[in-house]
Amino acid sequence: MSQPVSHSSQSHSRLIRFLTDLAVVDFETTQRDFAERLGLLLNFADSILLADALKMQEPTLSECQAEDENVRAMFLRARANLVATIVSGCAPGATQARIRWPSVSLTDESIPFDPFLRFYVAQQRDMDLGVRNLRSAVREAMTGVSASLQQLVTLDIALEDALWEHSRRFLAVVPRFLQRRFDWLQQQHQQRVMENIALGNSGLVIQHDVWLRPFSQDVQGLLLAELELRLQPVLGLVEAMHNEEIRTT
Image 1 (tube, rainbow, N blue to C red):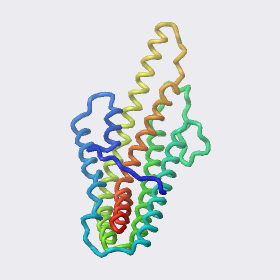
Image 2 (cartoon, rainbow, N blue to C red; image 1 turned 120 degrees about the horizontal axis):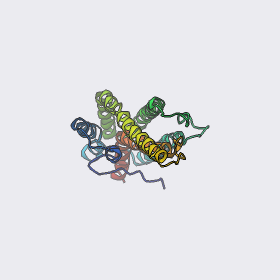
Image 3 (cartoon, one colour; image 1 turned 90 degrees about the vertical axis):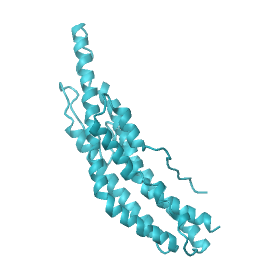
Image 4 (cartoon, rainbow, N blue to C red; image 1 turned 180 degrees about the vertical axis):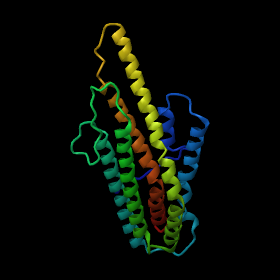
């Protein structure tokens, strides 16, 4: 039996909740607007599950079952690969990672955010390419299985074309929130260093890894949340395929 594929039914995406959890000071109005618009624009996985509503001709049972298994396996495999890239990349010192965590001098008085911005953007590009390729492959597998699924494929192509540029611009704002977290963690560390120096204890002076390791966990969580959001339209297609198979049994 294939592994089940599930998605959240909560009103806000995991990405929005994660950004909220990372906020270390009050969000400004424009930032709240960003979160709401991002959720409204991209959180349409539920609305794409149209198979039950599309009353078209029936596919053959054997063909639909076979394609359903293939599509679900394809989705799970691609998602696992994307998750592995994120997890390995966010492990400081992991030399085998395809997109490596930035190597910085832990002895510098302060560490710039730029290397981490480039790392995050590289992960975003990798996710975007992987998800778009997966989405195209899933649509190709659905083509010709049934008239209802073909109609859904046509709709999804139109949605992707219409929303891709908007979603790209919105997701490009995410690293700004990450920089806010980076700056706050570094400032907190520097404050603790100064307090220890005042007390005659210099043990924390150059221990940037004290705050960089938690930051790497924040980055990993944020990337995984963004991946979940990017995969929602593909998951909608996969679930529609599965619903079609159930409907014909």
